[in-house]
Image (cartoon, rainbow, N blue to C red):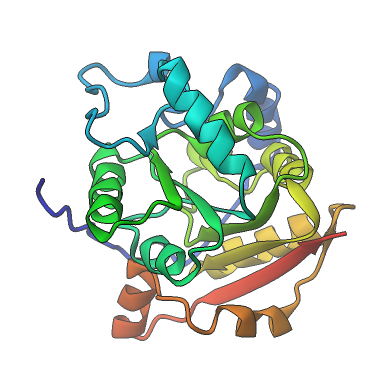
Length: 250
């Protein structure tokens, strides 16, 4: 498999939300409005099935019952951490290797990148990491029980600048409700972004949510040994500032 190298861009200097347009889109959220391949029936033509040799890579719809049974057992057998938007997986692969007593689930909608992570995890002998190219917003509420996640990592999510695309942002009220439902009490939501306007919007949404407390910058120490994502490395190389936000479920 080739080594896909994402091309990073700085993006716009301004970040805006069209509240009226967003609200209209969110009224259709439960119909799948804004999903990025979360439902295989909505995927563009030509997306191939996941290779069978990756026993810990899955799509929720269309997965064999025995694979889903193994996945459900895996999700319940140890404290669970989930990453949404893993890119090439530099963070999650190392973090899973550092914490063999915990289980990890990572989502990356770009299939080539998701399979690259699965291949590397298999090569490294990591048995505590599963990978999916589903849209996490579709799969998580259908896959997990309430209060079943210890940590969510959402690091440098796509800000989707254009007003017509803003419903695709991970941080919208309906999905924040899902995160709150799935986190256990005192569970952690760890977020990073290099888009100042998005950082402020995320913080405002989480501060106004009844189930979250934060931001709590003192929690950064807990992740001092974490490998940076490729996006963070890119920002460091060009001197672009970024921000980490830590919130805890009440």
